[in-house]
Amino acid sequence: MIQPGKSIRTFIGSKDFAESCRFYEALEFEIRHHGKGFAYIQISPGIGFYLQDAYVKDWCENMMLFLEVEDLPAYFERINALDLPSKFPGVKVMPIKQQDWGSEFFIIEPAGVLWHIGCFK
Image 1: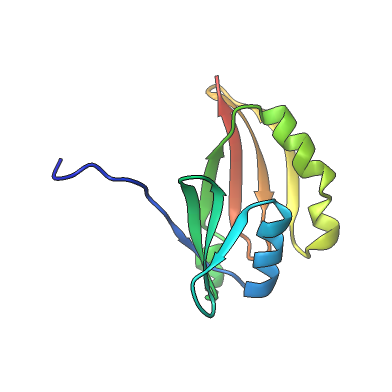
Image 2 (image 1 turned 90 degrees about the vertical axis):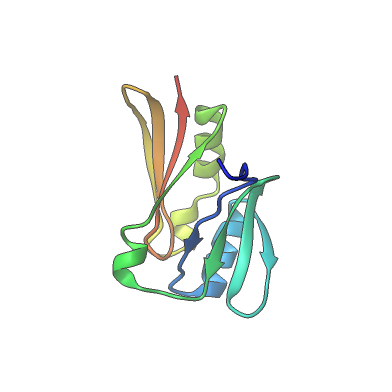
């Protein structure tokens, strides 16, 4: 390896940048704006992604992110209590599913990006 990496961050699009920022703030993620239509969304120290004011339907609706958490049932209950589908059109929160490798639940965010929130066995 030439040099060890410090982090890896993906870029995701948004159908409505302001609405996506509100959505991620509702998830209690930290929004760090880096200019018009571009922000770093921090989930926790050292973990985050870039949100862009750019929308390509096929790109957004085929984008998936996986967030590993320590206590999946508690995280799911916290997300469920936020009642995001009633606040953001198109948002869906699906129940926890048991998998061979662990368990996960899904969130479809305002632009159609699919979040896998999971915990390994």
